[in-house]
Image (tube, rainbow, N blue to C red; front, side, top):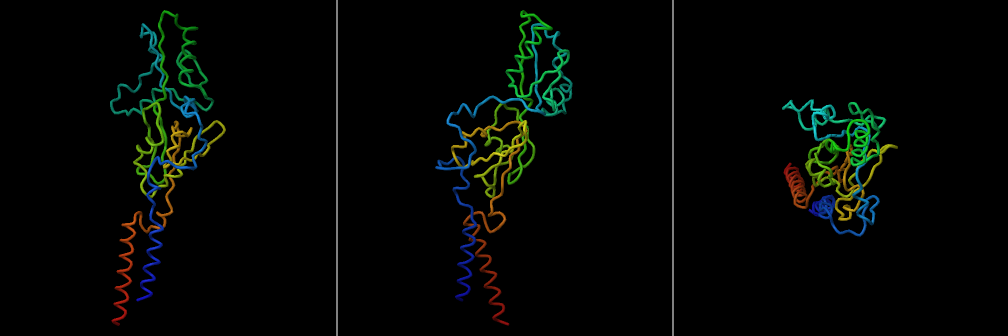
Length: 267
């Protein structure tokens, strides 16, 4: 009997230690220290405008007083296809940045847009049009936008995969919410953001349980980001996510052991 009690105590210690602490499941806590990469003192550092990268797709629209004069600049190849999704229309109608950082606009030729903001590209196109096509009185109005913010989420997440959101800015919480949320077995304290740079990919770490994550320069995701959520060690142990599930496991094991002892004692 003493050995059974000892076994129960050992099992209880193992299972309780494998339960996921409440503090590891709550977002945006006030914490003294965290692993967030490069938290600046100035919030304006977080909100720098996005600069165009290779493989981005730009949606460019040019408007003047006489719209017939700019039809060639505004492709409409998929607008008649009711079955085409927004992402498909953006792919076919948009201007993809090639491996050299260029886009090609009909009659205007190539523009190198790598590293420029959308506003800077608008100014480049407007200058080219005024120099070669129109006069000031044409009242040119140009809009340049990213054709959706596409990113990928993998790991311990509700719905892993590639997602496209049609918004200018998306923070890490919005990105994860659109991927089905992080389950209890996901590590919210060390979420990886894998970002593409001209010199290659870099990995950045975010602690989503720390309120200071909102000051991180990686709080807002960028097009083509990859987000990876690591599983907690409790998942590999498989003993229970909460105290209730842990106690249930203990009760099940004890019941099996007791039944086995009683069965063998009768033989």
